[in-house]
Amino acid sequence: MKFLIFLTIIVFAAGEINGQKIKDAKGLKVGFSAPVFNAIDSNENIFDLEDALTEGPVVLIFYRGFWCPVCNKHLSEFQDSLKMIEDAGAKVIAVSPEKPEYLNKMAEKTGAEFTLLYDDGYKIATAYNVNFMPGTADKLIYNFALGAKLKSTHSDRSQQLPIPATYVISSRGRIIWRHFDPDYHKRASVRDIINALNE
Image (cartoon, rainbow, N blue to C red; front, side, top):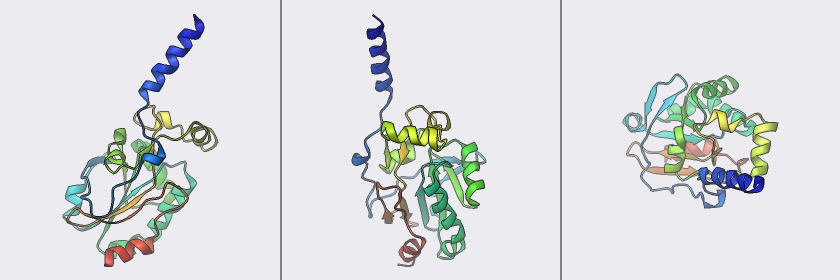
């Protein structure tokens, strides 16, 4: 009887998890229309991508969280080169599935002065097809070794993450460049982004 109850709990819990595997996340391609969205920033102000695009191109970065050392380094590099990107006419925004208070932690760690957004319910990552469900071993490392606490820092308990992709979106709403690699160590370079903006 105890075994049946335990099995029922496992099946029920598994039914709640609805993320795709990392191999199935392909990311939107260059030339596609960029899905527009609204999201709240670290101060719970609403950011509207469609409005932002009326002012020029947008560099959209997906990152995993404040707990990720590679994400910290990557966003710090963008902050260091922020003026160069803005001089090329673009605005930088970075999106994660973390609640606003954790966006503030990321800003403190990286010095980021660009917009950090909360992807509530993984809607933005899903629209760009970059969301996935990490494996059990990875989740143990993220949650316990790195202190991610994904079940409490995200909007639900599924613990999905985005592949840390970067998109350059033209003022017309088209994806004109992207960096997409399931290997989270490999990230977009500021130089490549500036080249894409200048082209």
